[in-house]
Amino acid sequence: MSSLSTTEIGPITVAYWTIRGLAAPLRMMVMHCGIPLNNVMYDVGDVDGAWEFSSWRSVKSQLKEENPLINLPWVQMPDSSRKITQSNVCFHHIARKTGLWGRNEEDVICCEEYLCEIMDIRNKVVSFSYSSVENCAQNHVKFLTDLVDKNSAFAKMELVMSKKDKACMHLVNGYATAPDFHLFEMIFQVKEIMRVYKMESNVFQAACPCLAEFYDWFAGLEQNKRYIESRLHTDIPINNKMAGFGASPDGKPWTRGQSYDYHTLTGIF
Image: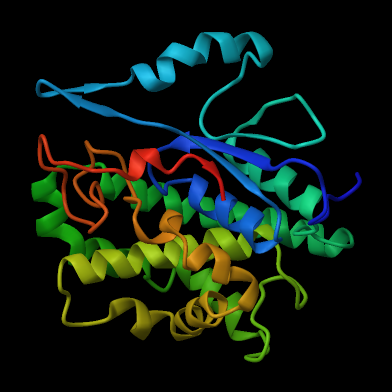
Protein backbone atom coordinates (compact mmCIF):
# COMPACT_ATOMS: atom_id res chain seq x y z
CA MET A 1 0.00 0.00 0.00
CA SER A 2 1.47 3.34 -1.04
CA SER A 3 1.89 6.09 1.54
CA LEU A 4 0.69 9.65 1.24
CA SER A 5 3.09 12.56 1.48
CA THR A 6 2.82 16.13 2.65
CA THR A 7 2.49 17.15 -1.00
CA GLU A 8 -0.54 14.91 -1.59
CA ILE A 9 -3.45 16.84 -3.12
CA GLY A 10 -6.37 16.97 -0.74
CA PRO A 11 -6.72 16.33 3.00
CA ILE A 12 -7.44 13.24 5.06
CA THR A 13 -10.97 13.39 6.48
CA VAL A 14 -11.63 12.38 10.07
CA ALA A 15 -15.32 12.43 11.04
CA TYR A 16 -16.55 12.19 14.63
CA TRP A 17 -18.61 13.88 17.30
CA THR A 18 -17.70 17.40 18.49
CA ILE A 19 -15.43 15.90 21.15
CA ARG A 20 -11.94 14.44 21.48
CA GLY A 21 -13.03 10.84 22.06
CA LEU A 22 -11.69 8.37 19.54
CA ALA A 23 -10.98 11.12 17.02
CA ALA A 24 -8.29 12.95 18.99
CA PRO A 25 -5.46 10.49 18.23
CA LEU A 26 -6.64 10.18 14.60
CA ARG A 27 -6.58 13.96 14.15
CA MET A 28 -3.20 14.12 15.85
CA MET A 29 -1.76 11.44 13.57
CA VAL A 30 -2.74 13.35 10.44
CA MET A 31 -1.41 16.66 11.72
CA HIS A 32 1.82 15.00 12.95
CA CYS A 33 2.57 14.05 9.33
CA GLY A 34 2.08 17.56 8.00
CA ILE A 35 -0.90 16.44 5.91
CA PRO A 36 -4.02 18.65 5.80
CA LEU A 37 -6.81 17.42 8.07
CA ASN A 38 -10.44 17.79 7.04
CA ASN A 39 -12.17 17.80 10.42
CA VAL A 40 -15.84 16.75 10.12
CA MET A 41 -17.89 16.90 13.33
CA TYR A 42 -21.43 16.00 14.37
CA ASP A 43 -22.84 17.80 17.40
CA VAL A 44 -25.13 16.49 20.12
CA GLY A 45 -27.65 19.24 20.66
CA ASP A 46 -29.07 20.39 23.99
CA VAL A 47 -32.70 21.18 23.12
CA ASP A 48 -35.40 21.78 25.73
CA GLY A 49 -33.78 19.48 28.27
CA ALA A 50 -33.21 16.62 25.83
CA TRP A 51 -30.23 15.43 23.80
CA GLU A 52 -30.68 15.86 20.06
CA PHE A 53 -28.72 13.79 17.53
CA SER A 54 -30.03 15.01 14.16
CA SER A 55 -26.60 16.31 13.10
CA TRP A 56 -25.46 12.68 12.74
CA ARG A 57 -28.75 10.90 12.10
CA SER A 58 -29.65 13.20 9.22
CA VAL A 59 -26.66 11.97 7.21
CA LYS A 60 -26.20 8.44 8.54
CA SER A 61 -28.75 6.83 6.17
CA GLN A 62 -27.04 8.27 3.10
CA LEU A 63 -23.61 7.27 4.38
CA LYS A 64 -24.95 3.81 5.09
CA GLU A 65 -25.68 3.40 1.39
CA GLU A 66 -21.97 3.90 0.74
CA ASN A 67 -20.86 1.67 3.62
CA PRO A 68 -23.45 -0.44 5.47
CA LEU A 69 -21.12 -0.58 8.49
CA ILE A 70 -20.80 3.18 8.82
CA ASN A 71 -20.39 4.57 12.31
CA LEU A 72 -18.26 7.15 14.11
CA PRO A 73 -15.42 7.60 13.62
CA TRP A 74 -15.11 7.29 9.87
CA VAL A 75 -12.14 8.37 7.78
CA GLN A 76 -11.50 8.99 4.10
CA MET A 77 -8.26 9.29 2.18
CA PRO A 78 -7.72 11.99 -0.48
CA ASP A 79 -7.05 9.31 -3.11
CA SER A 80 -10.26 7.38 -2.43
CA SER A 81 -14.03 7.87 -2.26
CA ARG A 82 -14.40 5.06 0.29
CA LYS A 83 -15.40 5.95 3.83
CA ILE A 84 -13.70 3.62 6.31
CA THR A 85 -15.17 2.89 9.73
CA GLN A 86 -14.53 0.89 12.94
CA SER A 87 -12.13 2.51 15.38
CA ASN A 88 -9.04 0.32 15.18
CA VAL A 89 -9.47 -0.02 11.41
CA CYS A 90 -9.33 3.79 11.19
CA PHE A 91 -6.12 3.75 13.22
CA HIS A 92 -4.64 1.03 11.04
CA HIS A 93 -5.59 2.65 7.75
CA ILE A 94 -4.41 6.18 8.50
CA ALA A 95 -1.20 4.75 9.93
CA ARG A 96 -0.48 2.60 6.89
CA LYS A 97 -1.18 5.47 4.50
CA THR A 98 1.00 7.97 6.40
CA GLY A 99 3.96 5.80 7.41
CA LEU A 100 2.85 5.51 11.05
CA TRP A 101 2.68 1.72 10.97
CA GLY A 102 5.11 -1.13 11.50
CA ARG A 103 7.87 -1.50 8.89
CA ASN A 104 8.35 -5.23 9.35
CA GLU A 105 6.34 -8.20 10.62
CA GLU A 106 7.41 -7.89 14.25
CA ASP A 107 6.68 -4.15 14.36
CA VAL A 108 3.25 -4.67 12.76
CA ILE A 109 2.42 -7.24 15.46
CA CYS A 110 3.51 -4.77 18.14
CA CYS A 111 1.29 -2.04 16.65
CA GLU A 112 -1.69 -4.39 16.66
CA GLU A 113 -1.05 -5.65 20.20
CA TYR A 114 -0.55 -2.17 21.64
CA LEU A 115 -3.65 -0.74 19.97
CA CYS A 116 -5.78 -3.53 21.43
CA GLU A 117 -4.25 -3.07 24.90
CA ILE A 118 -4.80 0.70 24.80
CA MET A 119 -8.40 0.17 23.66
CA ASP A 120 -8.89 -1.83 26.88
CA ILE A 121 -7.79 1.27 28.79
CA ARG A 122 -10.14 3.48 26.78
CA ASN A 123 -13.12 1.24 27.40
CA LYS A 124 -12.62 1.48 31.16
CA VAL A 125 -12.18 5.26 31.04
CA VAL A 126 -15.30 5.63 28.89
CA SER A 127 -17.33 3.45 31.26
CA PHE A 128 -16.30 5.67 34.18
CA SER A 129 -16.78 8.94 32.28
CA TYR A 130 -20.29 8.13 31.09
CA SER A 131 -21.53 7.17 34.55
CA SER A 132 -23.38 9.74 36.64
CA VAL A 133 -21.88 13.03 37.74
CA GLU A 134 -22.19 11.83 41.33
CA ASN A 135 -20.41 8.54 40.64
CA CYS A 136 -17.51 10.29 38.92
CA ALA A 137 -17.13 12.75 41.79
CA GLN A 138 -17.35 10.09 44.50
CA ASN A 139 -15.36 7.26 42.94
CA HIS A 140 -12.60 8.86 40.86
CA VAL A 141 -9.85 7.95 43.35
CA LYS A 142 -10.78 4.27 43.42
CA PHE A 143 -11.26 4.26 39.66
CA LEU A 144 -7.79 5.68 38.96
CA THR A 145 -6.16 3.46 41.57
CA ASP A 146 -7.69 0.39 39.91
CA LEU A 147 -6.83 1.73 36.43
CA VAL A 148 -3.10 1.74 37.22
CA ASP A 149 -3.11 -1.40 39.37
CA LYS A 150 -0.11 -3.72 38.93
CA ASN A 151 -2.21 -6.11 36.82
CA SER A 152 -3.82 -3.42 34.65
CA ALA A 153 -3.35 -2.58 30.97
CA PHE A 154 -1.57 0.62 32.03
CA ALA A 155 0.85 -1.49 34.10
CA LYS A 156 1.57 -3.60 31.04
CA MET A 157 2.24 -0.50 28.93
CA GLU A 158 4.46 0.88 31.71
CA LEU A 159 6.57 -2.28 31.50
CA VAL A 160 6.82 -1.86 27.73
CA MET A 161 7.86 1.77 28.11
CA SER A 162 10.39 1.00 30.87
CA LYS A 163 12.49 -0.80 28.26
CA LYS A 164 12.63 2.19 25.88
CA ASP A 165 15.47 4.62 25.33
CA LYS A 166 14.66 7.84 27.21
CA ALA A 167 15.94 9.84 24.26
CA CYS A 168 13.38 8.24 21.91
CA MET A 169 10.36 6.81 23.66
CA HIS A 170 8.25 5.66 20.73
CA LEU A 171 6.52 2.36 21.48
CA VAL A 172 7.69 0.61 18.33
CA ASN A 173 11.35 0.34 17.42
CA GLY A 174 12.28 4.02 17.70
CA TYR A 175 9.77 5.57 15.29
CA ALA A 176 6.24 7.00 15.55
CA THR A 177 3.34 4.62 15.08
CA ALA A 178 -0.42 4.72 15.68
CA PRO A 179 -0.36 3.37 19.27
CA ASP A 180 1.85 6.28 20.38
CA PHE A 181 -0.99 8.68 19.63
CA HIS A 182 -3.71 6.64 21.29
CA LEU A 183 -1.56 6.11 24.40
CA PHE A 184 -0.84 9.85 24.57
CA GLU A 185 -4.57 10.61 24.47
CA MET A 186 -5.44 8.16 27.22
CA ILE A 187 -2.73 9.57 29.50
CA PHE A 188 -4.11 13.04 28.74
CA GLN A 189 -7.56 11.92 29.88
CA VAL A 190 -6.20 10.41 33.09
CA LYS A 191 -4.32 13.62 33.83
CA GLU A 192 -7.54 15.57 33.24
CA ILE A 193 -9.42 13.41 35.75
CA MET A 194 -6.76 14.15 38.36
CA ARG A 195 -6.83 17.88 37.53
CA VAL A 196 -10.61 18.28 37.54
CA TYR A 197 -11.05 16.48 40.85
CA LYS A 198 -8.00 18.20 42.38
CA MET A 199 -6.37 14.98 43.47
CA GLU A 200 -3.58 15.63 45.95
CA SER A 201 -1.79 12.38 45.11
CA ASN A 202 -0.58 11.80 41.55
CA VAL A 203 -1.46 8.11 41.40
CA PHE A 204 -0.54 7.93 37.73
CA GLN A 205 2.97 9.33 38.20
CA ALA A 206 3.53 7.00 41.14
CA ALA A 207 2.39 3.87 39.31
CA CYS A 208 3.55 4.72 35.77
CA PRO A 209 6.59 7.02 35.87
CA CYS A 210 7.84 5.94 32.45
CA LEU A 211 4.47 6.59 30.83
CA ALA A 212 4.32 9.99 32.53
CA GLU A 213 7.73 10.76 31.03
CA PHE A 214 6.57 9.52 27.63
CA TYR A 215 3.60 11.89 27.74
CA ASP A 216 5.80 14.96 28.26
CA TRP A 217 8.34 13.77 25.69
CA PHE A 218 5.71 13.06 23.03
CA ALA A 219 3.88 16.36 23.62
CA GLY A 220 7.17 18.17 23.05
CA LEU A 221 7.98 16.67 19.67
CA GLU A 222 8.20 19.31 16.94
CA GLN A 223 5.97 17.20 14.66
CA ASN A 224 3.19 17.39 17.26
CA LYS A 225 3.34 21.14 17.77
CA ARG A 226 0.75 21.81 15.07
CA TYR A 227 -1.82 19.68 16.89
CA ILE A 228 -0.87 20.58 20.47
CA GLU A 229 -1.26 24.29 19.73
CA SER A 230 -4.53 23.89 17.82
CA ARG A 231 -8.02 24.33 19.23
CA LEU A 232 -8.66 20.67 18.46
CA HIS A 233 -6.43 19.95 21.44
CA THR A 234 -7.10 22.93 23.67
CA ASP A 235 -10.80 23.73 23.25
CA ILE A 236 -12.77 20.50 22.67
CA PRO A 237 -14.31 18.44 25.48
CA ILE A 238 -13.22 14.85 26.00
CA ASN A 239 -16.75 13.45 26.06
CA ASN A 240 -20.27 14.24 24.91
CA LYS A 241 -22.68 16.36 26.92
CA MET A 242 -24.36 13.49 28.77
CA ALA A 243 -21.08 12.29 30.34
CA GLY A 244 -20.50 12.58 34.07
CA PHE A 245 -16.90 13.64 33.45
CA GLY A 246 -15.31 15.65 30.65
CA ALA A 247 -18.50 16.95 29.03
CA SER A 248 -17.24 20.55 28.87
CA PRO A 249 -13.90 21.84 27.56
CA ASP A 250 -12.77 22.48 31.17
CA GLY A 251 -13.45 18.82 32.02
CA LYS A 252 -16.47 19.49 34.19
CA PRO A 253 -20.02 18.20 33.63
CA TRP A 254 -22.24 19.88 31.07
CA THR A 255 -24.58 22.60 32.33
CA ARG A 256 -27.88 22.71 30.48
CA GLY A 257 -28.03 25.69 28.16
CA GLN A 258 -24.39 26.72 28.47
CA SER A 259 -22.91 28.45 25.44
CA TYR A 260 -20.12 26.93 23.37
CA ASP A 261 -18.46 27.31 20.00
CA TYR A 262 -16.25 24.21 19.61
CA HIS A 263 -18.86 22.68 17.28
CA THR A 264 -17.71 25.23 14.68
CA LEU A 265 -14.20 23.74 14.51
CA THR A 266 -14.85 21.99 11.21
CA GLY A 267 -12.90 22.28 8.01
CA ILE A 268 -9.23 22.20 7.12
CA PHE A 269 -6.51 22.22 9.77
